[in-house]
Image (cartoon, rainbow, N blue to C red):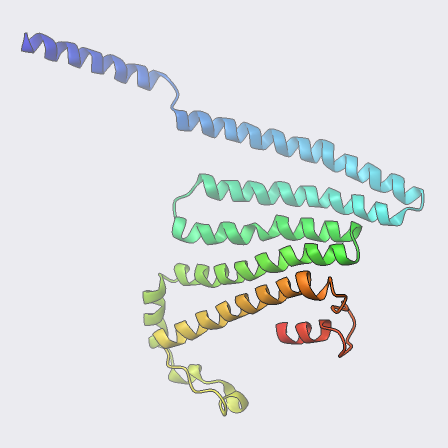
Length: 244
């Protein structure tokens, strides 16, 4: 009885194995479907949406509506940017082999569609509306700057490996020049140098985030922002000086 049961189990397992090999795997099927979807969506955008925006831009330019012509012509190139950048992002997400590094790459790549859409909307929405659009860009830019620094650290082997590499460098590299060295101490090459760099980047991220939120929700509603006006009675000159 035991032998018969073992034979039945072996026969069933062999049948299931042959059935599994005869059918396409789920991952292969999804990969083919994703490839077909990527090609079809790219073709639709480039062969339908892009010519449509070009036609609208030419039509408005002939009627003397140059602002709408610029808006539609820019939209045509935004479409190309979105297609290429999103495909690159999806390619990283599908080939997720080095997540410790690729997660920073994906964050940086998202700047391309964000910046393109933000620049495109700025052509249509002027005045206070554009400041709100720029705020979204500034907040994400601060986040990406932090991600870029950590991306470089991961490429060099992580924080411990980075600190070891820095400890081998010349100690004079931790100086700040003739002028700044009078008020700043020399940074010790190694872990201390890396920590100082990270603190500087995070400090910029925090300051940029706070100033962007203050501009959007305090200075702009109170009409004390004065964008483009280098007048000491407006906040624009102070914010620009601090950020640069």
